[in-house]
Amino acid sequence: MTSLRASHPPSLRRYLLVGILVPVLGLVVLNTVSLYREALTTATTAYDRTLLASAKTISEQLDVHGYDAQARFTARVPYAALEAFETDNQSRMYYKVSTLSGEMVSGYEDLPSWTGKVPLQPAYAALVDFYDASYRDSPVRVAALVQPVASVQGRGIALIQVAETLELRETLAREMLIDTLWRQGLLVLVIALVVVWVVQRATRPVRDLSEQLRRRPDNDLQLIRTEGLPRELWPLTNATNQLMERLSQLLEHQRRFVRDTSHQLRTPLAVLKAQVQSAQRGDQPAQEALSEISQTVDRATRMANQMLALAKVEQLRDQAQSLPSQLDRLVREVALDLAPLVAAKDIDFDIRTEPVTVQAHEWMLNELFRNLLHNAIKHTAAHGRLLVEVALSPGEQALLRVRNEGPALSTAQVERLFEPFAAMGGQQGAGLGLAICHGIVQALDGRIELLSAEATPEEPAGVEARVWLPLRRADFRPIRP
Image 1 (cartoon, rainbow, N blue to C red):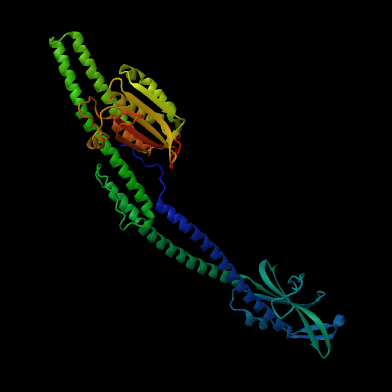
Image 2: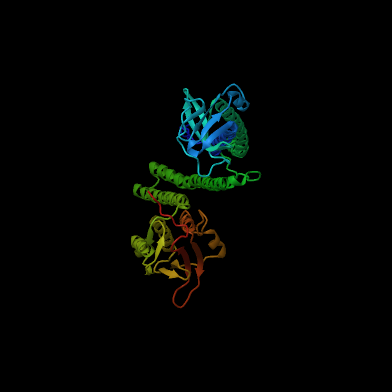
């Protein structure tokens, strides 16, 4: 059996997992980067405060002689004074004290001079500028403090630079990054497990339903019960139930068609075999035998054609109509085709039509009127009257009337004549013509009536068939090739 599965079928579970986890992972990555940057900024601010504290400690050890441009600074700052700000042995601190013009006072003379400027709105209550630089082939963080110094001997402005290597900062940054990553990773793992569990639970009804359908026998077309199913599956189950109903109807029609065909064709075939055997024995003249055989073949052929037409009506029942059809034109064409039958019985035939357009297959309209007219001609006495009329009826519907002069029908006969193989008593025929008409009218969302027409001053008694067809179906969808 050929598999209907695609080579790479889409997975609902994979779609849900990817659709949920990918955005979550994106948000977690963005959150991780944001948290890391915020933590790094906080750590940098804390260490910058340490540098500023070191610079202020050095400024307290300065002395000045002279005023402004003539000011001369002296510093008594041992390096041990900075050890209190070294938290471990990973990083080292350096300092340099100079004038704003660059004259060296104390510290590490090779420490790069400050070339920046104090921010207009500093983050601290001091004239300080923080910047990154390189000293002795190592990256350092530098705080440059512009500090006014005053004493009884003078007044001036000193520049104090304190630099710190970045080992401690980098170690802290790595620790914060690792801490953030494993926490976020744990969060992603928990979310993934929850999502997988939820998706498994959410898709379980789909798997159970598919397993239930897979275990069904081939001929089991019972409707799917929606009790206990999630509401999201109701459209699928309703559509599946509608499909099963249509399949049940088609299978029932197929079984009925096969049963009726085998039953109805058995009789003419048996008669045909008996006639052939009789002709072979010479029980009657050859010409007479051939004539009887020809009549039997004609009846069997007409019955087979009618049964095929009835099957075709069932196939077209659920199909949308294609193009508009001129009902009046089709009625006149069929009447012209059956004119020899009318002439053979010398029937007074009257046809009245006005332009009417309906949305229907031409084959269905042709088959509908052909069966109605052929049935009317067959039941009209010689020299009788037959009327065909096409008009617009109230309610925007097309009305087709076929009235023949003949014997009236009882109520029981009228109720049964639309059933397959139901024929009028004493009449030859398979009884499929009106059944075909009834099926076509139902397929076109129309209505058909058969009634005994009482005699009027204008028209004699007889049987009248009336068909109402909508001019355009509400659910019309053109068929595309």
